[in-house]
Image (cartoon, rainbow, N blue to C red; front, side, top):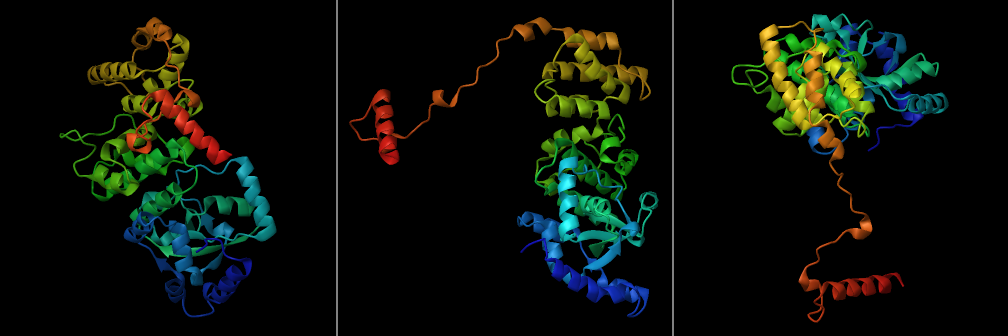
Length: 389
């Protein structure tokens, strides 16, 4: 089963459905009912659990309903927290579309399906794109005016699941994109359950401008909300609840922290564990951390991250600062400078090269007379040489 169809197959389905879209067969209501396909969360998650590509399975199932939509009628989904292709990949797709056309139908839903009025204000076209944002962007750059699409009927929760799960199945997805997808689904489920709506404001933001909300609201029992939203989201992403919170922490960080994390892998040593300890700090404090680490010439450690978290919590409870007010810079500098000399002098553990590695091989694979380590090594080498000779 292939997600990519031939140009002739796509044209056949689009031409068959064009009169329906243009109102030549029945009323507009009838047209939508004939061409729309209903999807639900269970169907999406079943496909994922079976190891199937969700888009691929639904495209094959509904290929008879492919229609041609005008690009001007399409709007990006405000819930799409995934990055666009880089320039190289985008150019490759544009060139391919110029030569072959768009061979993979996108998925959209009519704006009338959007339940959240706040969300609806961000969708200016007739349809919200659920899957195929890069295809639409590249089709526009290639000079096309229309694109093959499958129109789906989906409520807001299902749309969020569809967007996140189809993108998670992409070949390359960053830690930040995964974190924001988790938060997007978490916020939506929490809102559906009538939980605290404070964290939902981030769901309107694009990946590069997602808004930091500071302290994550906690209930009296110490969980993120009164229900088991975290368990539901963890299950849908195939991770443990603890892993979910650690991975999702990046979605609550400022752009400055995110860029420092992405640009400094290995150099700045800012890990997901460190992010977990600092993600509840306000914007002013988070934005101060990269600058202070650079000024002191230190790398973040788990001990420093924990100490900063604990002192920040006490300071925040006493001072009740605004988002832009940072934890005292003098004290932050002192925390980062503590044990700095010891860290720099600490010998680095040398990694063993492949040739120095030792492997355990059970006794049953050696003749009884081969007993010492050197005899066994020679025995193995002799066998390998015969195999290669």
